[in-house]
Image (cartoon, rainbow, N blue to C red):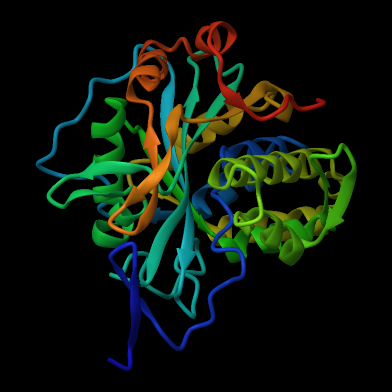
Length: 342
């Protein structure tokens, strides 16, 4: 057919649309931390209220007629998703004109399950490999990223909740173009490379950096650390940027941020403002980034897949439910991004 190319991961791919060289950037794991610093830096309550109110809500985010895990004993859990969008118009944020989810048009490329403890002193970010071979409700076994393409946010959330037995309290999404604009808005970023050197990158270069995986020794696992490294670097840059003292630049940054981020319809303005305020003292050094425990990779039906280590992961997800992720990280070996410098 003229409108579709060969299926990838069982998902039709449409021709005629340019795909970004980096399949997607990630949703800023704790995007709201950026707002937390920006909105409490002297712009006043009006801006604080105005910008939290501009964040786009996603209707019908959560699954219905599906089991829901018990709430964690403390803190909150966020499922953060980077969107590999083939839409010609924005699909997320207040500037959205296209559908957030349309079969074969969008695919989740970066998925992170984030736990914010009850005392709001830190954030724990676990990347779920997009190629994880998992059970997708009503579909059988497939790669995790197929869940979003097949059923949008509800099916992805249902899949992750069944996989982890962790309740997803809130969901947020951003497409790759929004984060590229945010990177350029702060003058680019200096990303710490594996050899210890820092390389300055603009938004397009940074997307190439996070999109590379074929030439990386550990493939997708190194790629998720690159995504985390990029995310943390942008957060550090925004939090320490001179733009915080420049009202015009601050407005530009906030406009980009609120125009590209979307959250679930349950996340009301009051809850968003409360989270922003409670997280105001958290910095990149208080955030722990890691990959979900895995056994390794393999081939299934001609597809390269990631096999999760469900035994080791069970202890991690229990820590999410018990609000004890900090203790888990201290006492268990984890595939962790090197600590931040601040």
